[in-house]
Image (cartoon, rainbow, N blue to C red):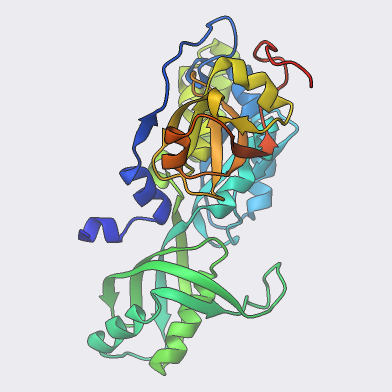
Length: 337
């Protein structure tokens, strides 16, 4: 494995190695549904999301409130809390897309931070100690956390020291959702025997979403005002993403048009409805079920792995976990039993 791959979150590695397998060929009716990239601003405001570069100071809840005010919408929610003093990527789902934001809780996170040691230690000792915190670790949430304070297991995918300046350590860490980086720094300090605390923290990734595509609140406001006053939607459409991108870290199945409405009514997905399958699907995986136009229909739990889905012709391959597409978006072809 290359050094570059060592600094990827599991969702990024999976996406990099993922291959789309074709089970059958079929066309799609252009009279129904819509490619997510073709949605207008009103549709995106009802089922899109924005990546905000959160400033230091306000809470995540306050930033969500500002986004609702800027975009003049009633409903929004974020995909993972950042402490008030932390900065960086805060993904905010708009309107009905809030139903999907929980999928980001399954995606890993990456942060860049500064850890301050309470005493100077040898660089070799520091690096060796940090290596011991890669893999499975146990944490007790800090006193100010919103969850119950009990010992729990989390996974650190990588921990890279970027720069050392006196007692300040610039680092990058990729970790499982729910990992407390502040607690991680305290635990490293205890292991070193000198004590340590987190000085600054910036989130750079959530699953396959990254900070490079985030905007400041003022940029969002300017783009919205340009759309309202000049009817120029280009800038705002570059900021509001179709909510399908929230599922980029998940493996997917693409289905026939004729299967869509039955799935919208909660029916399990059977093999005759399957057209395309991602190669990394395993039994009991959480997966996304999509149309040929790239629209999310539902989340499901796979009953087979990718190889079985491709090879078999009969049977249920996925049970439905959560439906996102409105009934009637595609014509009803199935019959009631």
